[in-house]
Length: 393
Image (tube, rainbow, N blue to C red; front, side):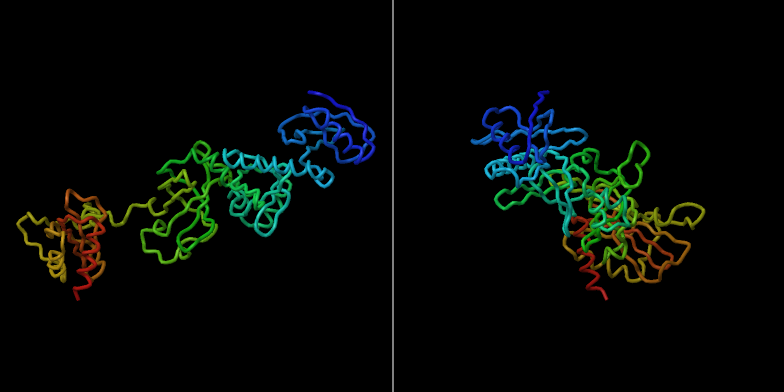
């Protein structure tokens, strides 16, 4: 490593030295802001700027116990043309980081009402609060975002450049994108995670995922990625308002149902951790064991199964629907308990056998299984049932 010695009596003489140095060498440059009688400083090179007027090198300047980089210099003391060329080179570097998806270790200079101020060489960019990794808020959930930002000021965090617009002076960072690069490769559809509910919206809830370490989960706070539980995936029951079911800070278990790697999006489900209650057949509704009456009738037992009150009308109307070829009661069972005297009718989500789907009807203690032969899919059958129920009084 080269070693240079310079005797500087003032800032102006330092700049004179700097100018002379640029005029006579293209190898190394030491930039000093504070006057001192004499310095010996080793220079470590890590990045260069080039222009028609000069070549700039990022150097680390060490004197005694103090170590600084040229990024910490007061830009006001530099000549305008040097400052302009340097900033132009740094914008070029920012665009390269953006295009190549590189990770930058940025120092947090401060914050405002919307996010953090991140130092990028001679530039200062912006990291909006929504682009912070969930690790910070999950580690200390009692803290406000401003308190978290205050505690982070002065620290170094890994970020990605997501916008570098020199013309409009917009340099935007994301810590979430860095987390996605580091952890998304571990994700697979079907994986189960522990999570904490973040924000709750009309359309669903965002859940922060806690990552496992072997068979044990990491300590609280290791929440690196966030996924969305859509309102339709919150519960098998009809959910009108997600806030009736989930609240910010709730701990939940979720299943990954989709990963969009291009858009860095994870789709989650809570309800799919439980069996669909409509995946029912007569055997599931009435388990054949000692806890219930086991008398079950089949249509081929030469015993006439009388339709439940009102069901015969519905069957007749269903046969009038396009795409429905046959509707017949196949089995009947009897429950120990009386669920309701009213007729209940639903389409089971059990997979069809060929073109046959299963309907279940219940009233009192009786449960009847109905085989429906149709060319319609589940949505078509549900539509046909809706039409029939609107016609039947």
